[in-house]
Length: 436
Ligand code: LLP
Image: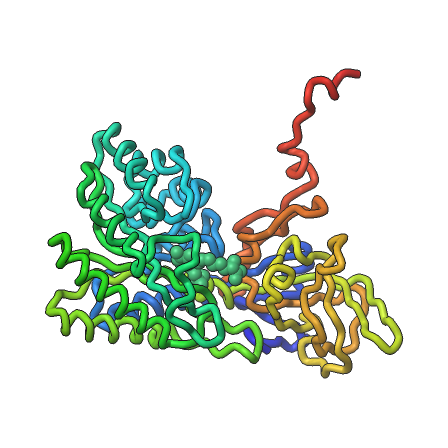
């Protein structure tokens, strides 16, 4: 069992709630989020900054999972928010989030999004390409505002490969290279511009990373660039934002580290470099997404079709799939699961869990050992809190499932289930088709 307990009925309990009851009450597929776990993780990062003597901020990367209630939790935990679109920004705005604590990312923000951000006092806009410098400066000037910006820098560390390499990530659609001089050029142009203030640097080296070394190496590269920038322009960057990327547990092959270990690695490298450079520590920002919400979520499905292909395999189909979790199809991501209503039963055979989309590639889990199963059993898939709901689609016109928040045995909706009418809501009839 990855997370949760088993009650006397043999049912999986998550967030203090009997998951079988949750499935009966709210229907399936159902995303369930454990509030205590989310808050625990938030606090783990905030504490990690404190214990390392760092001034700065933990900004939750909202792309991992966002809705109004999630914004509320992040605000209550005193954290900042990383957004990458007008939609995420608007959600934060409508939830009453302090937009001064928002970092607005994106490799191609629209003028409308930037105008909204400037108008509402978004804390940092993260500049990602040259044309954006003038775009932000113009918008700020027209509104008589001053905007704090960071530049997204490519530190040249590729942590996506199994063993990190130091050259790979130059070829990325995000940010400015250090080695090709573009980051320095961008910094100079921003410093020379009116109405925008270069507050610091940002980087993000990848996601679902277990190794510490790439983070320490990145800290050194970023601090070296901060020194070079100071020598060349006379400006000392006040903050460095190190992005996110801390890994979580999906299967036994994953060995995530504690937030404290990740932060300490970055902090130690940064401190050592600052000492060598004789520079004060910059404000320290991190943007964890997956590691805040990933393991806080499970998805409950009802088992339907059970198809045994003699001598080959057994396909067990659930009432969801790539619509609510596109990660296996997109990234060959692996998951673990239990039969929630038989959580103590012994595994008897390996099966393949298939989704219900009209697509052969819609498989959720290959070769998972499950107990004796029957139609109507509830399957709980673990670690679905990040990049599942936020990446859900209506493929095959399947409604996006509800999300419930569980705490101390209580569960209430944070997102209601889409209805068929919701699906029709956006449909329009071109006039020439609407004639009788
Ligand atoms: N900051 C920036 C600038 C980012 O680009 C990202 C993730 C994060 C923070 C948060 O990273 P995390 O702590 O969640 O690893 N859809 C993919 C993940 C894409 C992540 C993109 N950027 C997946 O499902 O695995």
